[in-house]
Amino acid sequence: MSGSGWNTIDSDAGVFSELVERLNVKDVEINDLYSIDSDSLKQLDPVYGVIFLFKYGKIDHQYALDGNKPIEGEYDYDYPIRDMFFANQTVQNSCATQAVLNILLNKDKEIDIGDDLRNFKSFVNGFDGYMVGDTILNSDIIRTIHNSFSPPQSLIDTDKPRRHHNYTNQDDGIFHFVGYIHNNGYIYELDGLKNCPIRHVECQSNEEFYEKLPGVIQKRISHFGNELRFSLLAVTDNKLLRAQRLNQEFEIHTQLMKRETWKYENELRRQDYTGLVMRLLINISKEKNDDEWEKMLVSAREKTIQRVDAGEYNERSHYLDADTSDEYNI
Image: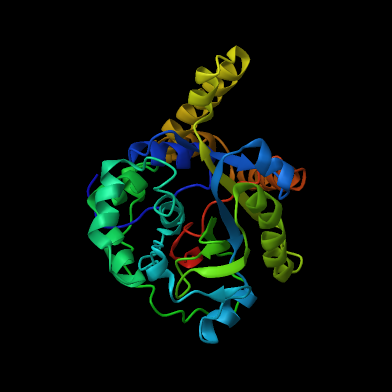
């Protein structure tokens, strides 16, 4: 796929799982987290990290403009000597993939990240966060895989630097991805828009991670006020391979069905239906006068509002990442 831009992708377990597989990471998938509690995390054990999608609101703007301070926790400027990987986000539309990379490349002692990412990490060893982000920006492999979940026609040139946080102080519908891991005895927040990894509470084990992470995220959410739009994805082992190793027939069937759904939905994402929609609209509208056309549009709007209010478009707490358009992008 040609082009230097980074396209928009969905906050979807199937998208992230295929992205990880195409990066040749072994025995890893991404799963939905429907609630922020320890039991949900334990059920997915092992959880290598959690991806958090939230609405980038007024308080985020304020802290970005005030020295880009973290809202919770503290910066760990010594992260390089702790052998931690961190990439700043230097291009818009890339926060989803960067959240995944920031988790995976800190877990290379626990999982097989594959030759491509292993070589990438070796190459950027010693770079600062912005140089690592620029290297991601210029990686044809990573960008091509990231862009493969949308029609080619939707690609836009978005290679605009994100090194200065001069965002307007308005509630404008922007969403953003960050990652959470436990490393070096603490829970860390990995946000490409921040200066470096943010250290939160002490954490010595997976079990402690499952117990303490919900509190860290709930504390972050407490700053959102009435804003409830967020989603969580867990980076876990491959549940199909695990079920096959344990010869769990029902679980194997469940996991195969899940992957069929992922495959079908990802194929739909790659199709461009603009021409089909336009032709349908033309065929419908040519047989109606202006009043009939307006009445049909009003009825369609009302039905859409009713479905949104009923939660039909939010069954899995999925939201497009902040990359819906230039206007709604970090």
